[in-house]
Image (cartoon, rainbow, N blue to C red):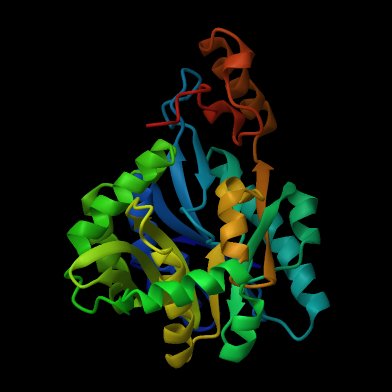
Length: 361
């Protein structure tokens, strides 16, 4: 088996994407954008045995520790979203599973040689992979469910799956004169940015969700024609807007913001309903609405579930690459806190656990 790490500029990157169904999270420009925000470098791991190929997008980050040697310590993580390894080739599911098992083992070995201590990957609910190999080389964690719309279904079927209160609000918004559309020229971008930031502040979002204006501009540059700004408005009054990616027949509801106005009849429901039809007309296969905060069955999940009865399973994969160094880093992190009770539980890697109460803005 041949294994290597490649940079986003490598022609192999685009070659891998061309032969495998993928999402916008796998695009080199998006990975570079996330790597800059994470303070790391964008790379992809490739494993190839002539019949199969595994492509794993990664952000390699330095670990700030007094234990680090002159060569440094690092860990590997996914970019924000649902990036997932991509598996191509193979005559059968059995051969694909066996190859994935070997390739993941080679990935862990290759990272260890590069002084990488841990690996955290987010899998894509729309691009399922055999699960057993992940369990052999780390811990596969079921985070929760996400909601998606099958765009190959009829609009009548979508409407049947739409919860009654959603249907009522969508009809009422249309009757009130609200219009949902794609802002082809991004004329509403500045107002969208303000609405998004206000929304994150209003819901008490973690600091990681407060993207600066430059991030959205760079995201548009990275995705090009694959990123769209959807808006809902009444005349010149914007009630809400959202970013929607469109890659390989997959439309992702990425980030959105809305105005807090009790008198507005649920404009974001009208926007989501509009996007279903717009995405179908363009020949896409699926609209992914995502899940709740932290993939939980919360109010956000309940809202999204009102548009479709279809669910995806969201998993993350956690691998401790160097156990001795990992445990030493965790012990060092605990010493930095006044007590272990002051760090968040169920966080991986544990040595990056934030202090409780330190994530909100």
